[in-house]
Length: 362
Image 1 (cartoon, rainbow, N blue to C red):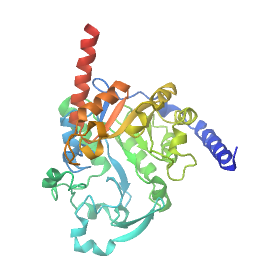
Image 2 (image 1 turned 90 degrees about the horizontal axis):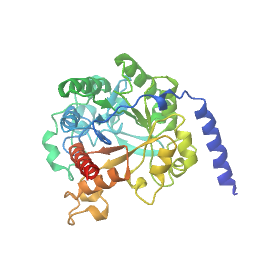
Image 3 (image 1 turned 135 degrees about the vertical axis):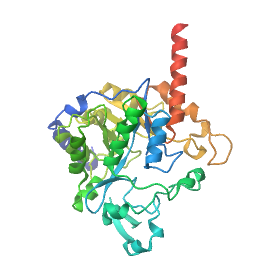
Image 4 (image 1 turned 30 degrees about the horizontal axis):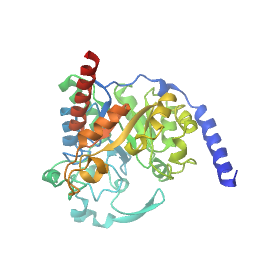
């Protein structure tokens, strides 16, 4: 064995020991259930139809059948959790059109990567509330630009309030699915995400049927586990030889049977890229064998985001055969799908359920 594999074995063993000391409550907490079949998770709401992380996006997701809605969490200067996919907000707000904030454009190193723009941690909540959301992919989803300038930046508390309002309106529980973004970076600048997230969860008495917490960084999930909230935790997984920032193992190593058993010590779910579960990959079977549920991401309907076999025509922004891709993954046995188009995922789920019932009757 080379020095590098030996080093990884030692690091993995150390991580396993640390995880083993964590409370098992999160992994054993009661699971929020979908109405039928796999959970449909509205990725940043219904990002295919409305600008992401806005009240309109979350509302449209639930109106069209999403079981869970996903807010990504970043902090403000005054340490309030707001929902943006990244702390750099030039692509998702109109901040560049505000001359009063021109001097705040800067360059920072976030998780080892140089990023230039405007950052949530340099704004108070009151200042962020003067901004308005814009469509992140205007060339791909031009239809969504009609909402540019109309929708404000939400706090995590406002998403919780909205989820409960929508739960009452539609007579079913809408689960919030927050992701801690760049948690190591925010701890390094004195704005840790986990304590404030725990405070919001406790203040609202969110139970396992109302909240599932996700992160790519195991260190963040372990901090949540230490709070003994008894909520399911979701370990998000990337692809290839990369790994979570600051974590000794690569995603490839985390998706081995040994790595999955370690994840199962603190989490109830894994969230791999959808490509990682397609045959001949053993990931789905290995995760289920470890007692983990599997939610694949991110399903989008445009050709450029679909496997080649499901594309229609050559225009990258035209819709392909999204229903076929959902059918493939439902047939494989995934427990959830994370999608920009929850309405289409629900229709595909209903169709799969109808087919199963016909097969059973015959």
